Length: 302
Image (cartoon, rainbow, N blue to C red):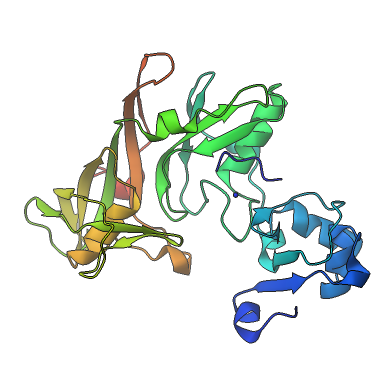
């Protein structure tokens, strides 16, 4: 199974999205997962095993990375065929800026997912971190991402880290009053401090801006402080404590000053978490770390 502290024939829409869903029938009962993929998708043993290990296959709602796991009649299997095409992230390439017995802070580059996506786990910082911990002797390591950071964004990503001999302490970190400082380049001119207080709504698909008809909303405030203006954009700094990182992009869009870069199109999203500061919930030690500021986020770089 995926080591994280977090979890019939396909129709045209599913095929277009790169997703295939099948239901195990009686004659497939007891097959290994890779045999099932071979039968349904025409994959060879090696290709099917690679796709499963890349985190692209679920039984029910649970991702499984074990090719030899046996399936049972009636189980629903969801397959994201693009998972095996992702490039792995070498553990030695991780830029670790803080590490203790309970957490690790990594300076994530642009274009790399911090944690496994729905479509796969290969190439994520979390997977490389698990491999790094295993090399260092941690028995069956688990990691948990404390705050989401979009793949197109860069900067500091905080993970809890433990072995199988410890219970999860992710909630202790997730509930912290933690200072997070971001830099972003917004489209257009921002002459002075501006803010947005549109509430947010958490859904199964993530976070979005609240609508008038929504009842269960989360209060949110984002303040954008301009640092420099050039090339039709404005470099700003944002501080968050408990709010989700996604609120920066959502509130910038609401103010009609979207963050430059379309991550969905493979572009650099000009958003970076450049500082994290908090009191360690398990040791009481003050942690205050900074990331290397990307060139676009440094007013004196040009």
